[in-house]
Amino acid sequence: MRSGRIWVDGRIEWVNDDHGQVVSADGRRWDPNQVAWMSPIDPRNIIGLALNYGGHAAELGLEQPSEPALFFKPTSAVIGAGHPVRYPVGATHCHYETEVAVVIGRPCRGVAPEHALEYVLGYTIANDFTCRDFIRNTFRPPVRAKGFDTFLPLGPWLVSPDEVGDPDQLTIITRVNGEVRQTGNTRHLIYAIPEIIAHLSSFMTLAPGDVILTGTPDGISPVVPGDVMACEIENLGVLMNPVVADHATFGEEQA
Image 1: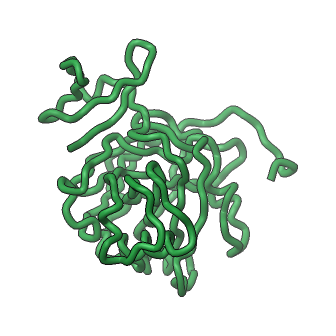
Image 2: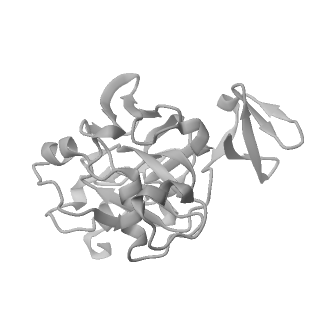
């Protein structure tokens, strides 16, 4: 099943996919290109993995981590498909990061990898947008670089595990203005999705609504205001968002 949320008639409406159309519980139908998408869920926590593809670590000139490199992303960064990502004033190097996002469906603590997928509600597409202007050294977590408002498009659909198949065998393609910029496959994850869930649950309780960002392949490149990013993942769909200039100001005193 593919479920999502749209904004219609001044409120959030839960919808499903029916042969390419967006359908509400009462039978109303919309063209998916003509609706205002919300993120498919309101995350409780957002936990990300950095450098979880060997190729991505190599393109940044960094070593592969000896254990999962974790960070948290604020829920204020979340936006839905079609909404603009705001490019910070004064920034010079921001880029997309297309990733499989895992959504936890029930409380999970101390789970073994072989049982980890039993706790997954579904999967969606994430664009872990990042501003490298604020990564000046290898110190982690890169909170400011990844924490701006609008820096986490999610969606458009939350897809049930039965429709996704093996989450560690999904092709990833990122296009900017129609040009392919990034390709990869989740089979190249350093830490596979069951291992990630098991690792996290070994020291913290995962709860319904928690979102895990599993990492991006190599192939990141800068985008600028006016660009349109299309993040495609096999069996999950396409997440599209434009980049716009943010007119808010900030200074180093806010770092």
